[in-house]
Image (tube, rainbow, N blue to C red; front, side, top):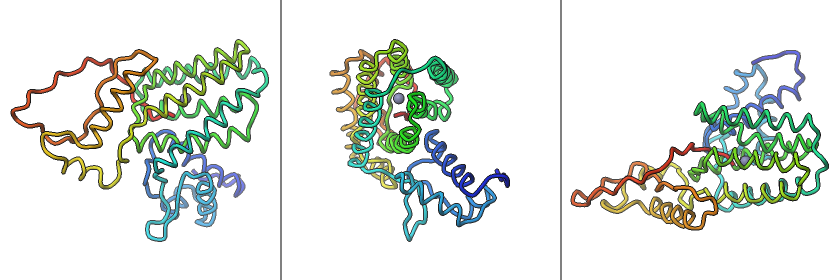
Length: 288
Ligand SMILES: [Zn+2]
């Protein structure tokens, strides 16, 4: 990974980029520890440079430092999750509303990105798919000619990916890709107002797919294991209710499978097994 021809600033940017991309791809999960010395060894740079890179990521809300644990990937709270989605709505809907015409080269790049999204979904490549679905929003800002907002969106999108990982989003990757395609089609037709409306709905759908459950932290397994036997764990039941409510109100008529109950306590032996709901295979995405 060492490239001695790069300046300190470029190396620092390369470290930041690698970490954000790993978050977007779901390879670095919320709570993952980042050890300065290990990163320094990997990139062949000084710890000072790594620390500077991590400080920048801290300012972006991607990592945090604690005296006890050192550096780690943030675990956003429900309130922080809401704020991150609000920020994305403001930035992305606002950008689409005021941007100028998208040229043919930028449109071709966006369509190429959509093709890559479809290919990753077809190949069931979870990391690549999550990365591309999140990166679409960064590419869109670039296509609209705003590098400042593209940079901001890279950080914001990485935060919402962390939120999706923590709050067990099962937003359908295919639905996300369809939304992206409709947004690009609206831009190609010069209808920015429609593109902005579609973006608002898209971010809302992704946010709505987050289940109002306790985040999967160190206590999650114990909580599931200690749930009363014969009854679903509280988190799972809240998730099922939310899933049912969203199914009832969904404008997109899709069969919604019941929320999975990871490591649920075995049901009561006299309880008849619940019929398995017919569901089309969902391609779980951590997009936002
Ligand atoms: Zn998206």
